[in-house]
Length: 563
Image (cartoon, rainbow, N blue to C red; front, top):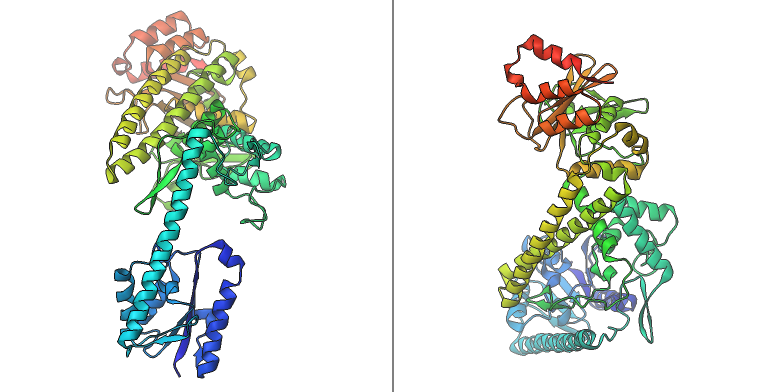
């Protein structure tokens, strides 16, 4: 017995909420009853496209259910003589007749009978000319109705956008979810605005989107879309990420138009169109923190943040070293050792953190403990956030210009390049100011340094990343460990002119840390901080390590131990 297959499609949520689905299912069952036919098992052969436009042909893409039906016809899973029930031909397509008709006729030629329940008309491979004319008229009418409707909607929306740009008139109920609409315009919803500010604050402090979402869920704060599209009421990381990405938080509104089915910006953003929920500084601080996390991704986020995440590498093979072990015996292990690709030994985590503190005293790290330097650091992060934001716009503009070249996008690219150049100059100037902030007293620095709290550890980690430093660790015998600090992520070779990026290295021997400088500026710091006396500092600057016999080199190293 020939089987009946039902294809159901509607393109909007309003149709979903109504009786469109039930009506189309009922019509298919009625056709079976009237003609003594059997309905195919709906658990396997229900073809249902929800929210897909037949006008744009979305139901025919690789993920569409109609495409699945056509593939079953093609490979004979659905045999000739079967019936396809649709409400009307416009459910199959609202595309232009020249696109829709060949597909419809091909379906009939393969022996599939098409029944339209609205007009109770059956189309078969033995169609007559009248049937063909009726189908052409139906398809043409469906396309024209969709085109006219789409044109009206598009025109009305363009008028709203024009009014928004010229008069600041609200777009109606469409708005960011942290705003309410009043007769006078948009206003911040106090409770939701507080949540948005909290999201930006958590991001700036080093928390990723997933952790922020989990935090909000644990605190019982409902998602903005709860009860509508989000029935669970829970926050998802994509929602958090969207809020952090959105410049509507700054009050901007960016009109868009569709060009060849693609949504593209229409003109410049309208500034101060919405009430801003965060300041520009808050927005760009969060962007800088996010950019740092993207550049140096961390696989796991915990309350006790791994202060060396994305920084510590294996000296033997150059791969990242991961923190492992339980409380009381934690260690760093090369990521390749578990796969048998490296035989480097494990490195003690507590000893590594002691070395890390010593490293911080030799780099531009006063911003971690000093308010004045912290202000400069904050300014630098804001500038870096602005650069990251402009570069993202630049990438989008370049992609758009490559596909649709125009004078508008060419002008935009020129302006973006100039703005980025100016900000990069500003970043260099601030970085030079920070470079003058050296640690003079290690005792005072250690007293104020916070490597206990999550925020403190994130700040220290981000500082080393911002300075572009990498640490390579190696095991020497059973207890000794060496840490090489370089401005390059390639394995540094000591005492070689071929590795100018090696700045200094430290050895942890027993309870002592030995420091070796490769440049005079670090020798000066040792002198200032009391690690060397004047004679030792002068010798360190004038002697060439390469010229020393091995026994003298060993003696010299043994002399200046950091207690």
